[in-house]
Length: 302
Length: 287
Image (cartoon, rainbow over all chains, first blue to last red; front, side, top):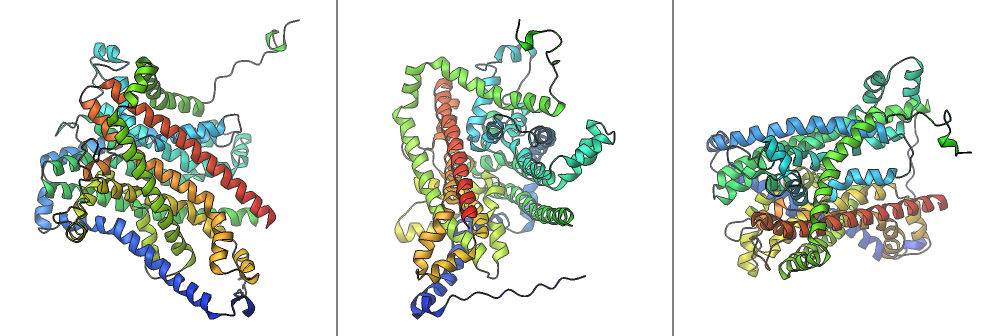
């Protein structure tokens, strides 16, 4: 059955309030100006720089662009970046889901504080994150210097440091996306599963996770995008050894500093492309999330 | 008679926290508390007098002025334009609105090194699309100067106010504005007395978030700045320079100052949120 909703009548204020034509004309003009100003500002601040990267990368055509991309240093930077993300993203996914299931449905003293603590990496400067890792693991002046030297490990100026820096900077995303959803959904389904004899693991895997899948996917996209692009924290701990500990964002800066402008823009286009893909995926998942919410509402109301 | 918890049999058996809790605390400990402990330990080792001295060297103070001043300016500019953009997204419809909407998120999604590269290319005073005309017409050198630092901060803090104001603006009831018109208020009066007060918590929250982000930003700023002390050197870059000179104490102290600022701004942002929720609650209770 279809429900026909009568079209809403737009309420017009009585003539007395707007008797003189001045304000209406002015507000109409204002209504036209606001989108124009918004577009101009965003075009100037965001679109122009973004376009310039693409134009510069392809300034000499497609072939030199592809040639730049096959430079061995760039390829090794890509490898390093992918390795970092391959460790940091799964680790943060496990943490994010665990933290969300632990925190979301409980009421306890200090819950707001704990949530703020999880948010902390968003407000700490990435450089300070890198500095903290140096103070902890540097072989010459770190807190754990003795332990690390006796074990013969290398953390700072090596990949473990890069991975740790990336993990710290990206770990809040997942928990932040999943917690509000779990808070909204409530306990009933899990309790039902438990009374039916499911163990904790089964409850998580078959009930909790499916109910937050789109939020988790959303968090995963944000985590991955940031992990691939992190610069500040990584640059402090990486030592920027070309072909070894250089990630793709560090490669962009280094190539630019060395006046290898085309190489820099080529690598930047790759990273920019990843950012665009992540934006598109985000839009898609946002739509799915909305769809699920509406479905959920319809279920609870019907 | 001993208190209840000491009597045998009445004391609840000690229960290990559940697995999610164990993972959460272990992870937070390793990834957050341990590094925070390291910087606190090192900063404490410097001593209060030494801390104050290292935190207030003329070089450091010059970077605070630049970092905090320009970040404040950038976030205020974006406060005004963020409101305009949010208004355009919510209250009007025009071709390309959806495109504008997704462009807003680009500074969040774009790696900061790419943003820095893009900005220093566009604002280069030799051949930049915007930098060359600015240099030729007004004699302003944007890239590799403090102007460039400001431009980078405007870029990275743009989305915050738009994204905080947008949902509040969407939830405003049009009836209030109509009531205000009916009672004879002009559109300016309606805007400043009815609409703006309700948007204020969201706007301030967005400005505070953008400010905090701009103060801590490194990647995009370092590429567009020439990083000369007292000219266009920002605080995060100073920390890196200190580290490179093996001045670990200096880096630690300035890092601690930034860390304290981060904690403070987190507190302020949370307070603004609480204030905003109270505002929402009372206004919906009255309405």
